Image 1 (spheres, each protein chain N blue to C red):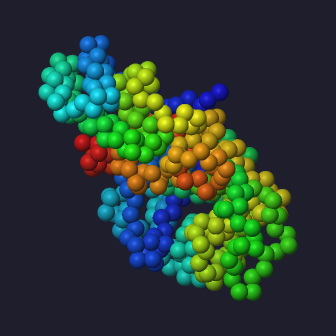
Image 2 (image 1 turned 180 degrees about the horizontal axis):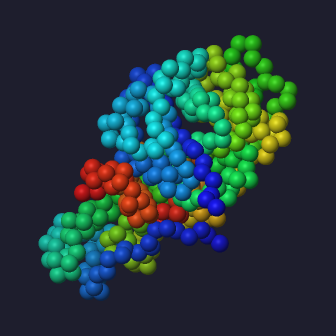
Image 3 (image 1 turned 120 degrees about the horizontal axis):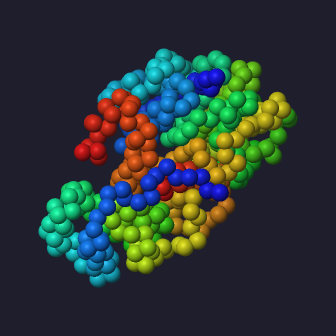
Length: 142
Length: 287
């Protein structure tokens, strides 16, 4: 049995279904069609006011996601994928939709071993030669 | 009955940086990890002290952290140590110097390791406890013929080269007799041993991690590992940044998301801790 994560799996603040759809549309547009986040900012800000949500925080979270997405596209680093998935939750983008939209570069990546490289090396991961592992990452939701 | 309390210590030895002309630094994610490491130990397992040198202390002062360690800060042990040890090759030797200065049962906790719950149940039954066993990867744990050693040095015949090394990011030693034996063997290897290897891992991990297991094997003391293997999904008690630090140093976005996760996970547990609140108030990432 896997040890229980102490991290709340979903963003604790709730938003309306309509706003979720707006955010999903933004993700699809930026990720699939190279759309611009900039042009949607005014719309998002209006929605945030209506939903009693901090726009500054959401903008920061979205910017962080899209910047990391660029890094991921350049490197195919599976760790970046894991962090993208985590950050998507902070942006109210569901895990299910994320999985549909962005595929991992290396699907065999272990759930518990976070590496910095994208090699398939297996030997030596259990020693100080390990260059990317975080032990117990699942305890903080990684 | 109140559970036993285990005194622990962190070590920040800056000589490996300063002796090679580099400035000592830790990034925000490393500092936050260290803060949570110290406070979570205090919350569940006992007091914690910091051993550092003058440069390390200046760094701690600059970040307004001297109150973090309830066991205080010692700068004398590392600052005054003049052992003939090359700090570039033996970059973790400061931990062994601090261990030597401690008497009685104690825990060395790396600053990038967080223990998330009371572990007295594990330590009570241990004479030696380490984080996890390490595979004998020949690129890291070199064949003895490939190790550099001081002039006139010979590996003793009693060394059992087949025992698995122990990761010492967490190390508990109950008795001084074993501790002294281990430290003597380690010092014998490190002293006047300045020939540079091709990389800067193998010499250090031999002196610290492999020798620990070899010495324990010789003295027939079992090493109790907190984890049977590092990435076990059964791990319910600790987080160790380990090699992940290199990625945190390379990518600021990963660093930000990691810190958010740490705060989500431990913020509430430490919400009543004034040191934690004071630390958080000063962080730009928290504004």
